[in-house]
Image 1: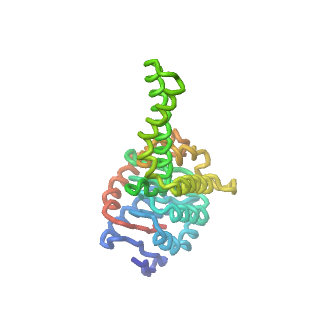
Image 2: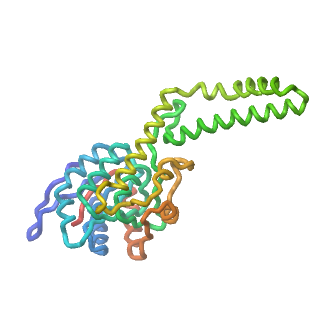
Length: 299
């Protein structure tokens, strides 16, 4: 939905939010207005089922309003983020644009900001989370074994597990045969052949080109996170202390949820919402769950 500038008699012209479906725009905007009043800071709400180039275009259209909001006397801007992530490059672009336009902003997370949405949150000076909200591990998804999609690190972990399984099967085979008086060199040769028979059908399904893509995508995710969380400008207040290596390459799966306590353990500047803010989050959460996209600023 293309946004429009609306003239309200006696008030400054403002841009209407983009909302799909459009009939939920007013209820969401109403709660956002109350949230903005409670916090005393301009509020940008970014809710999307999938962050892609279309969302980047929509955000770009708000640049003048966002820059103006950043110049207000409130001293900062709130960005409410509700998304499971999306295309890695698009998520990075959203994070980069917000970091350029808003020198000091806080992220509000009423429900979830996972994967690429967590990347966006790295640009915030503080993350205010609902008690039931969560962030997520950062990692691009790729097809693996021509079936389900997995994060690059999960795919590499699978290959490492195959390697470990091969070594363990060789060791177990050697021990078994030596205990039965088979000469060590023959036991090793036999155990190696048996291990190959066990592992080869699985490893043979891996496209060697995938290994390079997995490694490159994982490295790109870490680089993007570093550039957002640790910008060269020392004056920018971001999530500089976060353990980015664990965030992008943790052994836990891509779907692993990071609640506020886990976020603090990863050295996010994260806090729980107070009771009044939590009540507003409770009103907003079911509305955002019904839209595929909502993007709007209450200045």
